[in-house]
Image (cartoon, rainbow, N blue to C red; front, side, top):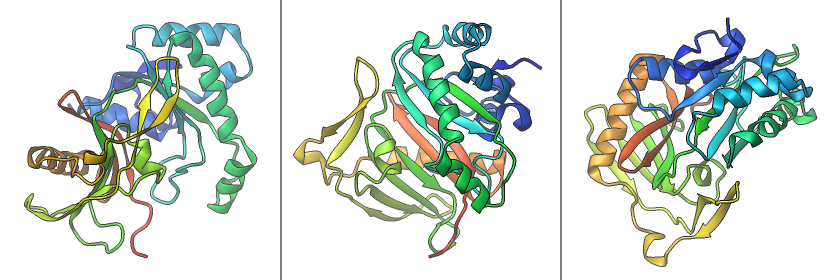
Length: 272
């Protein structure tokens, strides 16, 4: 088994982690995901330790990807139904060149081995040393992005719940905005749409990393999803349940008119 593979060939969670295999499943099933590669836990650890051969292999593997890049953790026991590790492992957005991927991989390995991450693991009953895979993908310049649940995470109702905002979806995930809120039933009927207050958007910057930008006043309380986009998201929700099973927590983005799946994991909490 190779230590570095295209996402479409990541099939073993024990080697590449749940996130990488989940995205690989999506690509194999014809869902749109940003191009990327999966790094095994073994090669990530080698890069973190400064192994020059491992670093060279990783840099060669990401060279064909369009820049900038997103570098995300894919630990073996991450994104499960019992423990998502949300907020515990580092994600680095807008890595501007393939040459800087090795330092990003090293930072992610250290974040997964930090005191807070280890404490979290112990709290959810995981005591083994983590095997930390990594996913490297082309970073989308998204117009609108957010999260979606294929059942209502607060009530357990059989309906799709969508939260959306301008720019990169990290504004929603990190709680920087009050996102737009939508509820859609199984037949694709929109049950509720409520504008949020989206005063900030996260955007990529040319030198690397991201920046918070002020949103134009006329867009702060304007709904950021049209009916056709809601229909596409509803279709993505149903397709994700076909591929992964029920009760999905999905991160998505629209870029240049195309809907992309960024992540799909089990909903870890239902009800207040």
